[in-house]
Image 1: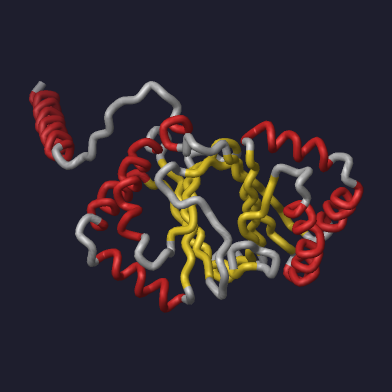
Image 2 (image 1 turned 30 degrees about the horizontal axis):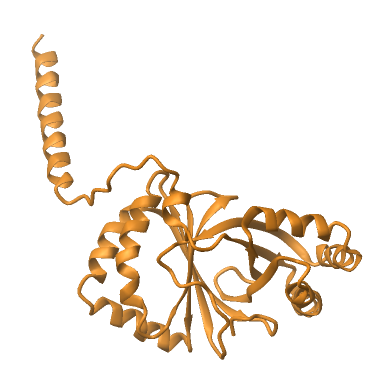
Length: 264
């Protein structure tokens, strides 16, 4: 009987300490008021109905130049054609991160109806179908996501270059998107002085609970100086403190714009 009593006593001590630790930690947890609406309704812009699509194309290394040339010949035609309610936001090759990769960001003005309108028209666009067929011979894999833009972020606008772009991607714990948005709505003001904030998005279809932040810098040294300056602003460290626990995985890509990219 004695060994069993000892084990119960030890378990009680462990339970007590664990509860005490949980109570202590709860004092420092940032609380978010409960909501009944979907986070897409609470976090996205109300004044626009833009839907975004981001594409990641992993290209055969020996085909990257040919892929870029083909892309630069065809995609601007869709961008300029008023019959298609879509526009290019940016086109890049990854410089640091996943190699031999192309990233394309599209805007659909009018949301899901605009997306479906484009898809239906492209099914009958012979030039585009030939483009896809030729492109498929150059790719190792591809994936995409449909995104909404955060209400408190800048809407991406064309930029003159030269710039490098950083796409920081965060995979959040399910159920934490509202808390992420609450913190970043306050924190984005610390990252505006050098006009580095380009756009912020969260996924709706594809891999879920994904956040993309897009930043622009003159070069890598400018990136380093701008990010260090943020840490000297009171309040930025608080945002990092509260948002880091929400993240399961994060990734950074440094990207170089293609010639056709509105973001240069």
